[in-house]
Length: 368
Image (cartoon, rainbow, N blue to C red; front, side, top):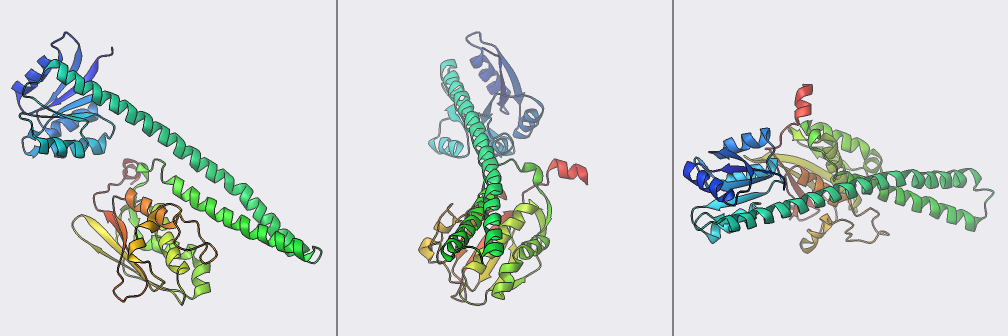
């Protein structure tokens, strides 16, 4: 068996000695690293390869849960076992809820019970790594497949359009109707595939894409992308001054584009759309108010589900992925998205937030 690297995070030297003695009581070999505080433990994790962490719940200046959260954020697949001087069901529940692999009490701790907990945590971590790897492979496959399907769908649409436009006088009416249907169906298929590409793209690694982002510019680009829909409906869009904050610019453009497109689509009169922003200590809060047909309160959660549709395609065309994609983008930015009651009693009022704790990627910082 390979020697495992174990990090002991405990401010008590006596407890660290007890844990080391317990680990090696059967003559097995371990590479044991020690830290007296959560901050020291995080520093060690950044500079050493560690297989598992034994973390004390009570640490000076903080508690093990805060250190556990920091470890999970920076090393999400690293197994952590929480330790306490005395057993507590409340602490155990909090530890597991916050991402600990297991929870054990130092009182009456034996080599057998400690090894059982370590083996279980290591096995669970291996399974999670395999699942993560398979999910990445599936996400990459789905993205490539959706992207490659766009070309033949576009070719069918373009070719049928050329035939209808250039040979309509030579083609029988019944055949022309079928060609027109092919054109419309292939155009719809292209739109669905395009929406699927955007949706699956969110599964790919994007941590390097966070940078200082001008939300005013993102709204301008989104509006420019929707020029045809805006002009055809004579829509009026107002926007207050928005902040420049850490985000993924291309995703923010897609977010506003999907939200605005939704407001334009579900309107039975001239659309009026207003975008505003407020902030608190932790988040930026954005609101998009429109004068459309609105959404019944009992169905507001459903519209964020993939492929969910409240209306049939004959009434309102669409992929069913617009708001689902918007939700995933907001989740990427550690925020929430939801609908609330419109103050004027008409239309929809959508809210989404972006965390202030997001950081510019190291690559982006190096380019500055």
